[in-house]
Amino acid sequence: MKVHYELGDALKAERIAVQARDIDKVRVGKGTHDHKIQSTTLRDSAFCVIEVPLRAVLERRQ
Amino acid sequence: MKTNLNQVEAAKAWPWSAKIIDQLLAKPEEREKFIVLGASAGLTEEDIEEKVRRVVRGRVQIERVSMTMPFSGLETADVLYLMEENASLRQEIEQIKQKLSELEERIPEEKVIVLREISKEEAKEEIRQLFSSGRTLYYSDIAEELRLDLELVVDICHELQENGELRIDESAL
Image 1 (cartoon, rainbow over the protein chains, first blue to last red):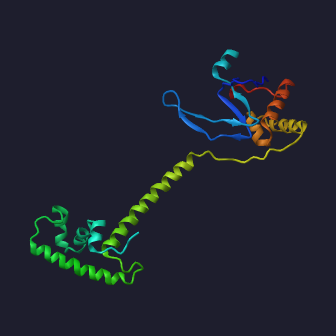
Image 2: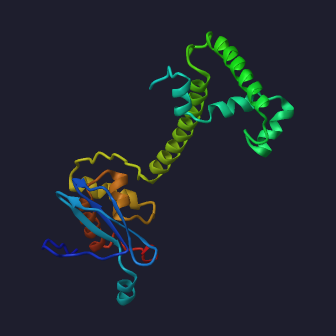
Image 3: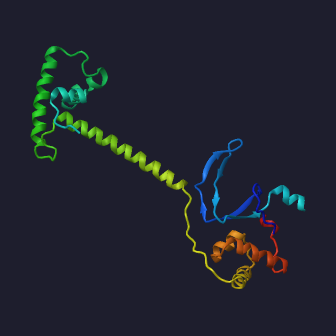
């Protein structure tokens, strides 16, 4: 398991499980086309793990 | 709210009161006229005087009836005004209730899970047992079901994977 600690390290996936001491309210915005995009911020001891990788990553692996 | 209005004040506060009273007091055959032509269409001076007399009589009767009601002392216009205000407030309350229930539906349900503090070995054994049924589970499912820290679950799953006890279900990805 690779763990990223540096400022600016990012995760990109289809499904990410998260955990933190505090989670902000979910903000709803407009994404591309008519898609709704939601965002939030995890604060204090935040931990995220990819549960389902992006389709492209899966295909590349196979 | 001011409720003891005199006639002039009542007419200012609620200018259609006299018209409504006229319609209410009109004989059945005259009511059609109100609907088709409007309150003042085609009326002679005598008709108007007769209507005024009937309105005054009607007001006296309504005031007598209203003496037994909790809002005795109010004028007819006030009562009608309050009735209309009551109806509009009820309508507003219904709208607010509807909006509130819509908002409640949008709020994600909060579920409180108290995490257990157990040793890594105990947690590993519980995860083994959980997978013994052959189910496919995400890290978050395991953490929720066993009430364990997500990071600990991921760590243990990697160890079990390296030992060949667990394997990734490609169909779930």
